[in-house]
Structures are given as C-alpha cells and as structure tokens.
Amino acid sequence: MVKNPTPPGQHGTRKKGRRNASAFGAELREKQKIRLLYGLSETQLGNYASAAKKRKTGVMADNLVESLEQRLDNAVFRAGFGISR
Image 1: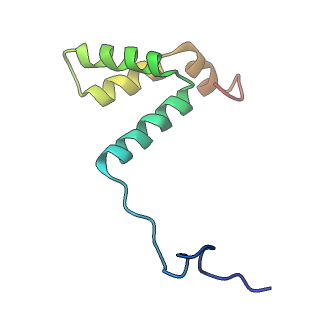
Image 2: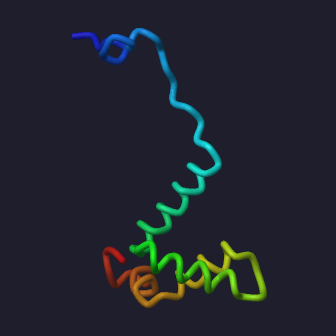
C-alpha cells in the first residue's frame, strides 16, 4: 500500500505547507512551554512574571527563569529525588 501525498478532501489536491508562525504564535508557544515545564497555572505564571518585571536588575526573562528555578519543587527535581516536578 502506497500513501498518497495529498490530504483527503475536495481541495486536498494542492500541496499546502505549514505557514510560519507569527510573532504572537511564537511567544505563545514559548509561554506554554514554560507553563508546562514548571507545572504552573496562568495566574501563577502571571504573578511570577510581574514580580520579575518589578526587579530593578537584569532582564525580565532571565529574572523569571531564575525565580522559577529557585522553587522547591524544581530544586528537588534537579537534585534527582523526584522523577517529575
């Protein structure tokens, strides 16, 4: 059996590629990666982001990652005592 390279449907005869993500889409994907990696809700991530923005020194993104890495659940995971956060 040979797979047909075109998608099914009436208009599946044209070859369509995936569009490049917009700037908003790329930022949203990165935000969702951070949320899922550290197991945060939207509210928690927003609180961490606002606290990172208020800090006087450093870049906001670096401050955010630094504060997320200092959480106890992350420290336990990085030390190897847990299999997940």
